[in-house]
Length: 89
Image 1 (cartoon, one colour):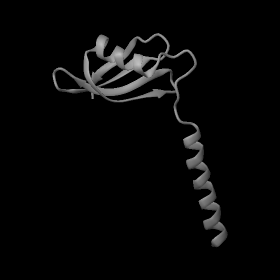
Image 2: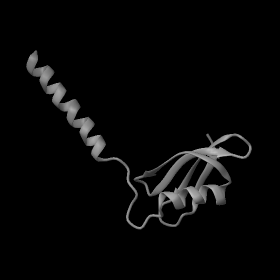
Image 3: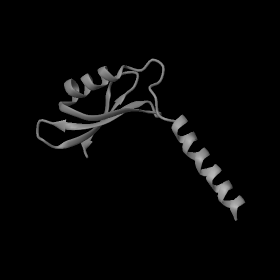
């Protein structure tokens, strides 16, 4: 019983530490996070950005508010800076 509990604890701990090591990060050649925020505001009309993070699929993803008061989510290409998605949350 104790061996099974200990083995389960080791497996769970290794899964959590592997997840932390695989966190999404901006790739080489990406625009900066500041540039992504500026793009969301100037090209997509956001007045406030609530969150933004890099995604391993090659884009910045985030959430914010536009002038209409509604919350939207967006994706910005990590290398080109083009807005890929802009829709209500």
